[in-house]
Length: 114
Image 1 (spheres, rainbow, N blue to C red):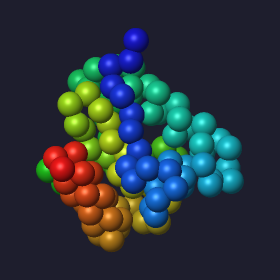
Image 2: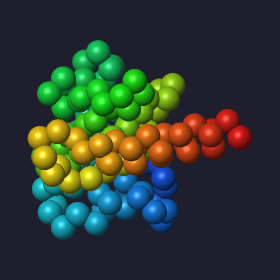
Image 3: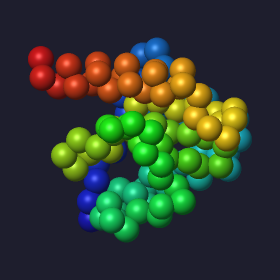
């Protein structure tokens, strides 16, 4: 049984959809690693998540690394919301990638309320 539900926002078909980004990857092993890590997180309690995969970026946004791919996400009452996906360019996450994830977070929360 799954502990966490996974949602991609913006949804498929929209600009910057993390789901579409993952599907567009040409390296099948990268896709498999992402799927494996998301499935693993969805099945275990947050305290048991591998700390080498997870990094806190801001108060509300976290990062999951899978090879050379970074997934930025937030937690929303039993749901992991994948907000943005990008390729790792430098050791440190680029400010513009964090800003994109923050914009998606704000949009997600405003749509939830409204």
